[in-house]
Length: 75
Image (tube, rainbow, N blue to C red; front, side):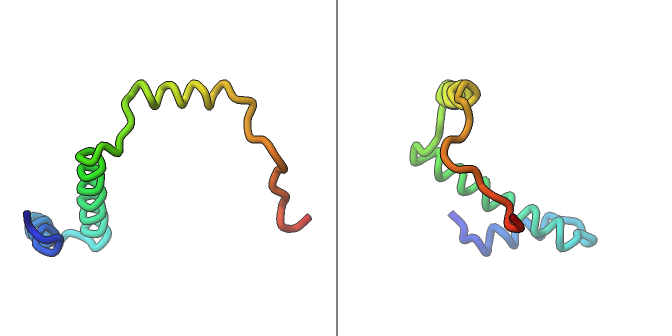
């Protein structure tokens, strides 16, 4: 497995010469998030589609937040 620096350099080398800082930062960040997602998946830190749908259904059926409501700073 390559180091993060080597992976970033390889990614940047594939970009066109006129790549912007924004494009470079976006792609390096995307690569980081994909690596983190792969590590989470390998470690079993994921939800199945059924688990997500069940939680969404429960959330949609709930009456909403309970407890005191936030007040505006100027009140």
